[in-house]
Image 1 (tube, rainbow, N blue to C red):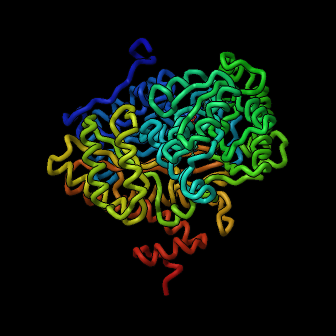
Image 2 (image 1 turned 30 degrees about the horizontal axis):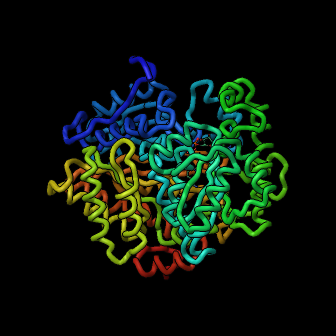
Image 3 (image 1 turned 180 degrees about the vertical axis):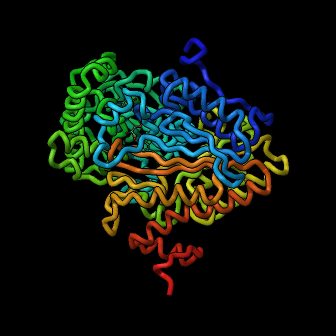
Length: 555
Ligand code: NAD
């Protein structure tokens, strides 16, 4: 990357305990915005793209500079407003109010199509914020690793006696999120074949130790996979090629695949390589002929999904991993696209009923020792939770930090506030070298409406009701979060989701402790009440056991 001024340059968050702003909440927002664009973290930092196809942290470099400038001077009783990656105002609020309020990619219902979004984006009026790209709490591939680990653990539990040893998983997409798949499979003892069209994506995952080896061909990949499977050894294998061609080829070869999923960036048809197009030509073709590209990408996805259904018919466990590939295949006219389920109804919803979801934190000191200390605190706080302990230990050993050191683990209602308050005490008593930011993915128990993913097949049919993420954002603002965001289109694409995020800073003050207690109780509380409302028994039990008030169940 070259240059300064209004163009691309290398961005890295400051480390340590010295403030460059007027307070830790502003400092945290600034460092996390910068950290999202750190070349170690972002997939394409020169384009401000963090992950997930075109998920961006700022609309353009001028907007980025204006946000940095504004955060540097923002007072303790002021709030910066961000409209799709551009700072549009500073308002006087109060010290309990968030320092930043963000709205990304939102469009009125009838206009919520990719075509209209692209038109507005080309006019410089909006930006695709994905989930944690535009809300500044992306922590690299680790962020998704634990969720992916949990999902494959649930697959193992459901179908393979609790371990993936002796099984082969086939998937595609080794990008920012999809790159977690090989390590999540091997952490569960299995073998994974992972297809990607981008050789750099394969190399990057090998470099970061998420992927073990690269095969020279499909036949080579299959030979390595069956050998490791027969020895019940975990192994992940990258193979270069187009999934729309290689997955059908594997089906035709009767490959002994046990589990099939996919994490190519199918949510955005301009980010999925059509059949017959060279990877090198992808970007220019998509830019020059977006309508033609979209049609060809959807046709390719239909072939890809058809082969996934073929594996399902042959007895494999097949699921959609939240990238909307079924919806795109259906648009291309493939009728059985929804023959296999999404991963949330299949494996994750019982966790959501407990308010459980991807809780994460980052050390603003930049010191990995701070994360090691918080890991220890988590192990002490929840000694009875064995899978959490297994994860924290494995993560400590195997996760390569990208940007500011960070950790993720799934915690539920009644747990997140305990962890957050403990971290705040550790900042206060000097155990940690600097404050910690505590946030989460938008993919969480009560913060997203996404009928192809998080809210697919809700018990009461409320899949597309989007009041919940809006209430979630409002309750986090009212509870004292440091920054709060409302986005549209993350994960599954424009027109298909509305979701909210929050980040809260543990700076060691009493005020931060009070905010943390409220935010980290009420935020997962939204997950519990959302699932009580939809009629889930487990959520009702959790509400009753842990004292979550639900007016319609009282009196
Ligand atoms: P990304 O853009 O960083 O990576 C996508 C990868 O797919 C790239 O490496 C690209 O080369 C590859 N690809 C594109 N077309 C291909 C083809 N035809 N064959 C083989 N490889 C191809 O995206 P990401 O951040 O890794 O996210 C991937 C998808 O997963 C997105 O749709 C995202 O919304 C979804 N997602 C799911 C979850 C979840 O929890 N399930 C979470 C986040 C994101």
